[in-house]
Image (cartoon, rainbow, N blue to C red; front, top):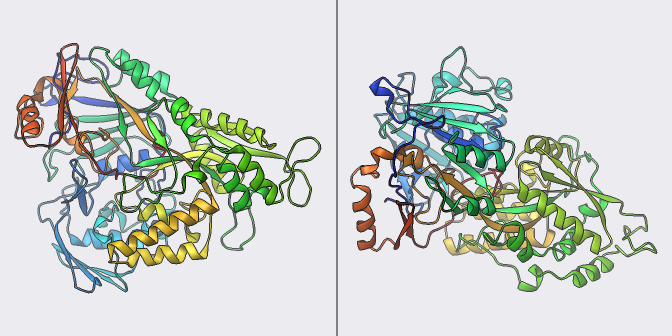
Length: 609
């Protein structure tokens, strides 16, 4: 399915991309991407930031893939799969034509090894174990057969998004070593993986990450020789680098920046739908998980669900969408976005409205009354003091949202101070529990299970950034994970969202879009996921990285149909409404159609990314 094919005005050679193929003895064809945040780990068992997930997807393969059309499951390392009638055994057939980048064969043993590490008690479990809920044993019965045995059904097991690592490399890494294992190039040798690209240069926290194409990739060699990521501190210099031709693609920019690029020759920009949300997160109770003693110093007020819920009524979500998001999004409500039509629960309208009078009344009822100075006090009569709010310096959205939040708190008689820090620093602050509230966001996986798991008690200090814990919520999470009746599971997930909305560890501010732009005079054949509305990169999979090619080679974008022919075929087949947008001689096919918002993981819908 051709989701977006860019036809060339002509090819410009420059610092960001080369005009000729390396096979002709000239410079490599290099696709350079500007990022607004650093990779925090190339180790797929340790990373948190969504940039890290993007790097893992280039380096490693997964059990299954997701289509660019509608996110339906597609074969990847597994060519087919089936479960027993009772759901307690899954059998996967593994490809027999895959090799690791060092030439060793990839077999079912590598998958059994990877999943076995996750089922252990090391750091691998903290990141991924929720996806293997109920799995008691993983066995490679031969080179091409993987069998998983379960104690209870797992409704999402085939979707498991765990990168598969080579046993012959990782088996030497002990559990203790895993905590600091970098999985980076050493002594000039690329990282060993089976994905479409090989990491040849880059360290976590660095400013440049360089990948070379894997010419022996089982699903076809990429059409570019290199993908290079450059980290910028903010949107403005990243956009300027695109305009100057220093990079070929920029990711995570604001709607305002997208508008500034529209109509510029040789550039195509879009506000792409994302499967994520942005939120204001409170410290709901940071603790030392071994001793149970509190850590950090959260304000007593933010530990109270009634206080947090009342502050949610002070939010004017529509104003945030109209001003901060420049209209590119919609007001938020819960952690399961509306694109998950079956699973999304929408709170009552009156609980989402901007109602400062009701917020004040609820604070009064909860004991947070106003003193003679107009400032609210704790129920014991002592001052609330100043709430510590944190925003991310690499996101204008983050800083603007918290500026509004500070004003709305002041209207209620609550003092606060906003501190702006880099994303990496904010992660440290969160893990130390030294905050009252911060702004960030998430991308949601192909099923909401992961996102729901981050709010369970055992994820405190790991994926949970709010430190929320409720045993009833945990019980519902376990139930939905093994529920095979889709309607019953949906009801359980609705109940979980209702609990989270009332306890308010998160105030979901917006479901937004993310701004992306490409030098369309250099590169073509970018694919959207989902088709017609979704992102060009930061997808569930590596579709664009494998499809993209120099603009002067764009006559066969999808491998079988020429670009112009594809636009005609799309309209004939009823894929959606084909819209041909003219931009200075550039023709772009945008297949407009309904799509399910399901993709990725940790990030702000704008920049945790």
